[in-house]
Image 1 (cartoon, rainbow, N blue to C red):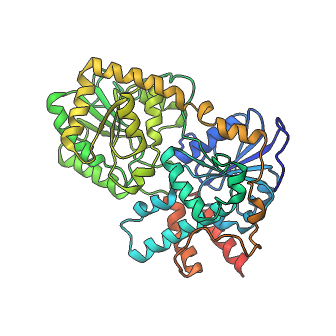
Image 2: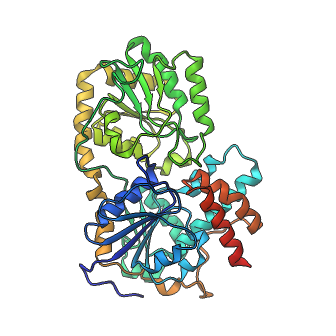
Image 3: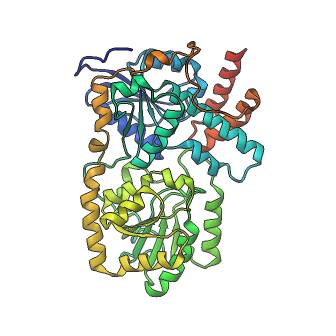
Length: 465
């Protein structure tokens, strides 16, 4: 096992994502960006993406990388922080000497069940096998694993146990196993949002300066339930004629991620009920990360609706963090960890899934009852302090001050016949799976662009030959 570096040593840190690094960024890219910014205060940090990169880092370098260049990227680092589908493409990561931090905040093996739900059964099986293969490789090699909540911690403890990573070495080194798996939620800026201009009220045709804005603060994906929300708004408008529902981002910033089926159904339902342009509004683009405050501050209530799926059970809704940051009362469907927080701390209202009446009542109350809205805002402001980036990233910052290989690192070499096989992956034709899954999984699960996917497949085929 590699000894830890002396405390205070300046490390060379490589942060790896597949997502687009630009003014408009989705959750995975935002998280990678903020991790890079936090670690750059003490270390030399380079953020690389296999997708498009058109934004300069702040205190760190942000760059596009390629399949061919990636090994040199890793060789030049002491610590590598990885998220997404990376290990499956680079078998040599299993044996590299670098300390590897695996970010598991997004349980993609569960997410893919919903992403590919409407595809043929054989294609769904291959996509899941691909996701499980990636997870198997991550669990086999990681030195430190990050998750976003206590619920996720339970999920990943089960996976790590099945993978053989909870063993006498890791247990004896730390019976709490916090040195192997630690909670690092998504975060918000420590500074309060500052609005440079009105982006919704008085700025969007059909929305006046005094209207009541309910904000859907993110993308529309198949595991969300905007349909119940639109039906609720249809009922709320009879009590609150000035209610306006605003969808913040319909088009994903990664051009390879298509509009999902539920997004089309959402537009159709709004049209069918005669709400589009009068009470329901769609922002077809994706809001730049640095200007999202202009939209958030214009809102009166933030909303998050989802179905009672297993994805909901272990999700960490990053849009809720923006609601906390902006001090918005929150209406959330029950079932995920944040809904528990909303209910327990009085951040707004938590309602049963797919319950139009309960959702309508909650929205109407927070839009018309000044005392209820003020109480929720006060509770939100108090809770928001716990989720700022400096607070949530503290465990990772501390680890990087003296990074070390996992206590069972000597067990992890791929040449070791006793190395555990973490996850049983369904048997499929490997080359066929690569041709099918690389396009589908990388595209749907925060992929890095068509050219990078093609390069990845070619690299895998060449390596196998």
